[in-house]
Length: 104
Image (cartoon, rainbow, N blue to C red; front, side, top):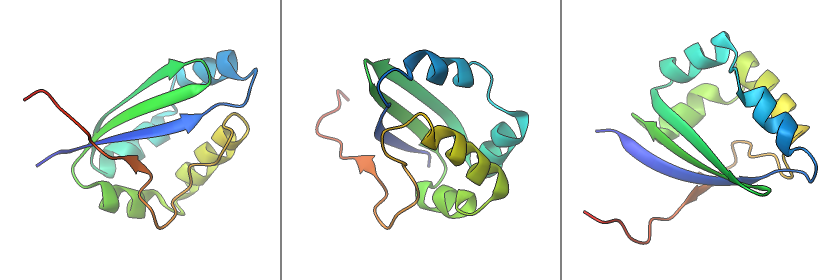
């Protein structure tokens, strides 16, 4: 069963256009790695500096474990660290937003 996970990140002020430019074309090797890690879709919405992600993935914990320390992911996270207010990283917490309500 696919999991749906919501995440929140925040941009550094003035980095909005660059963030969108960088995401206009995701590197092929990152796309392949995400697919290999079980990611079925990853959508990002922006409201000012706030970024809201919805990830549909086979197993979120397994995805995080697969990505953590991978050279392609490390390079992407280094690039994102230039743009994001806080590095999302792969800490003990899964970093996801808790679901409050969903229309069935």
